[in-house]
Length: 235
Image (cartoon, rainbow, N blue to C red):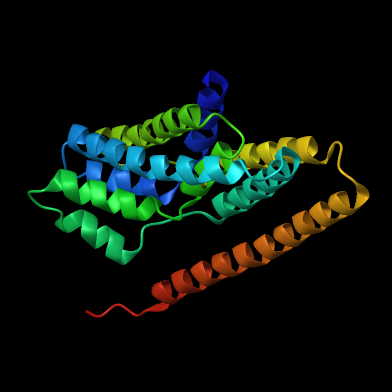
């Protein structure tokens, strides 16, 4: 359980760096008391990760450990590519953060709960729970996410500045790729040639698709930025 706790803490802490929920935590911390925001995030995270480890644990019981290591490695590869892509708050999420009024706690808690459903940190928690002690994964992943968001809250409340997003995202991506390589090696070390070829093909396909998608996202962002700069000012 202790090993699962530390592994989950590290993976989820890394997953949260530069993630949407960290940006949300910073946004709320700029407007409301930090301890209210942190308490709401803790409750939402505990609930979401309880659901995650439940599904991950019972899914893992029916799947061979070698296959789970391969699937986990491919998942970590996807998380790394997802992290390189970057994350940001859309207009609707920013407006929700701005107009949360008297019930700040419940507003922040519900926003984080909904934001985490289907997010990469939830998927990473499910992946970890398939082949690690579920109690350790639950505790470690919850503490990891709360710690990462607490860092964002500290920055947001004291400095009112964003984290150096590009540098953090790249560092997190490197760690994810390291996790991916480690898990894939474990899963493929005694696998047959068909499994090895299929896995390597999946890796190449994921990297190719991810590279194309990241390129398109960045090109769209650059085009949008250029369009904004070219709009003539009205005097």
